Image 1 (cartoon, helix red, strand yellow):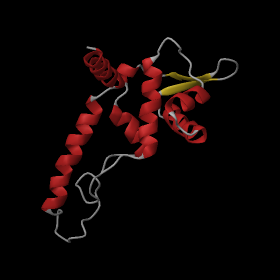
Image 2 (cartoon, rainbow, N blue to C red):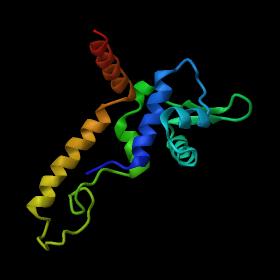
Image 3 (cartoon, rainbow, N blue to C red):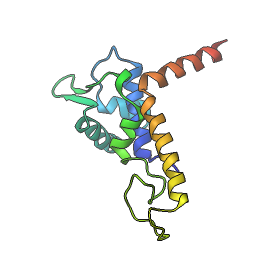
Image 4 (cartoon, helix red, strand yellow):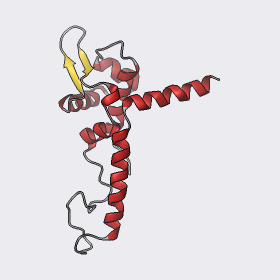
Amino acid sequence: MKLSKKAEYAMRALLAMARTPEIGTFAIQDLAKSERIPLKFLEQILLVLKNGGLLRSKRGVGGGYQFQKTPARITLGEIVTLIDGAFEPFSCSTSSGTACECGIPGGCELGRTFEILRQDVTNWMNSITLLHVLEREKRASVSFDI
């Protein structure tokens, strides 16, 4: 299981913004350059994040994107769900409501087992905020500075 490049870029862009909150408004071109994200791709990603309520845009001179929610309230789960949709490792896990190909009424144990994984991953991603990631980043850089 692998997250899409689009979801990775979305998280990287938001983390770059959260790393330098004093800037306030971030130009798409600057984010694309600093994070090495193709500009047209980043434009699409930021629009999805804006429509999802995580960012807002500012037009005109000095325009760009700003946080709508604070990094302490934005979870990795929110970002991934906006970009990739809900985490579904198996097509017949119980949350999807899709009938299992195995034909077992109520689904097979394999589907139920992957439903546990789906719940665990979803709960974990919804518990980790951008701020948590930045705090881990700071701790890691301190240990390298020694």
